[in-house]
Image (cartoon, rainbow, N blue to C red; front, side, top):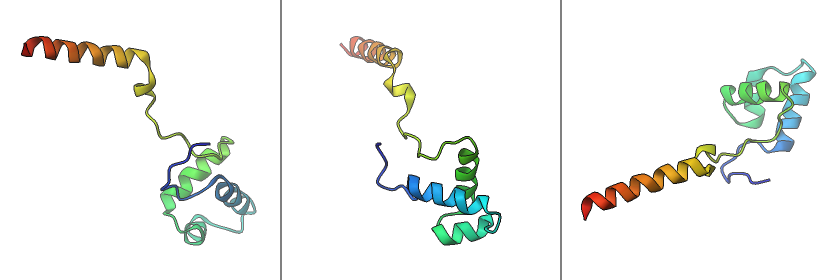
Length: 85
């Protein structure tokens, strides 16, 4: 798994967070304080955990991986270079 070096919650942290939230003894502010992240981050993790997505998402933009983007970019570069000559 390719994770960003600035990631705040590892997959194990996310599983632990979900287990603690499921016990109904822990609330979002308490979890945020315990894991040292913001409350919106906790809410996002919980929302994704409900969908069984406990691993961090890949941060690469899918648009840049596609061949269509590369071909369009290449066409723009060729047009700009032909105008300059």
